[in-house]
Amino acid sequence: SLRTFTVGMNGVSFDGIVALTAALKTNYTLTELSIDNNYISAAGAKALSQMLSCNTTLLSLSLPRCNIGNEGCDWISDALSDSNRTLT
Figure (cartoon, rainbow, N blue to C red):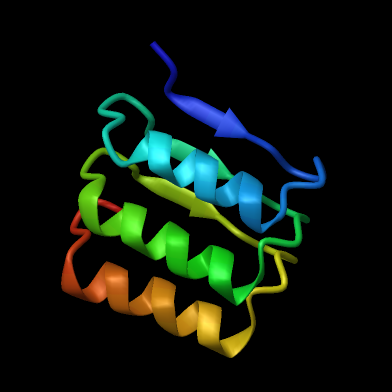
């Protein structure tokens, strides 16, 4: 089963992150997700935060240089503080 997924520098944008996060909402094996160097935007970060609220197996998330800005950081931060207890 899939435990690590890396899509760094693959041109993932908002549509791609929405599709990815929809699949990960019910994934119970993935523990590491790396989305480095993709333009997912604040809206993509919101989709990611919704997944983080549901996913209980993800232990590591890497998002450098994803252009999520302060708003995107707020979405992720809120999801982690409110719902997700596994991600460090």
